[in-house]
Length: 274
Image (cartoon, rainbow, N blue to C red; front, side, top):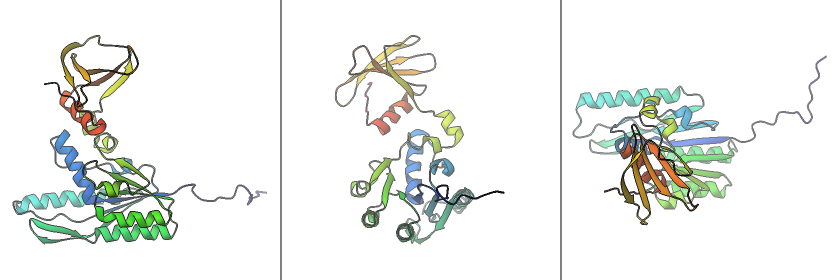
């Protein structure tokens, strides 16, 4: 006869529940900025299943697009169609929930309504009801700081994901922890064709290894550190010293412009090879 043990083996639920809250308008601006800088494209749809990996639920908030003054009706309809398609994709992703606000105003002078309030209400309710142990907010508006302060006081652990330089530091550092959104942290969530065309730079630290490469020029960063640029058959190599004698930092990529922008955005490393 089967016996159920209700003692130490009793189910006590998940050990930790994490919810992700996304200000869609803000995230779209971050992705558009990355796309323009690295890919010369304006519309890239993220893989939200990958972006939300590790979260029990994801709540996405956005508003329908508004027509701009210079935009034709056909162009606006196409942009609106893409918006609806992306929203439906998010809705179809397991554990994802979409809430849409409204866009008001005249072309060229529009604003979103209901989004900030809806995010604030939802985060507060989930906190008060003890539905989650940790909350992550993707947003950059300073208006969210009172919300973060209130959640911190309630004992909720708050993580902010935002773009460096595009977010108020008062908001960023009011949270318990933070992650900066950039080409590196969003790379896994980019469309597969973009990842294949623009892979991350590779590299290692170790003894000098330049076989198959010819040195082409040298450059400096803002602190005056020296970098050497090497050209191979299909790759570029950026070489720099490390604190360990006879050990060098090797960085490789097939696209030099992409690698330099990548280093600027992810390491604040500005190398001038002019």
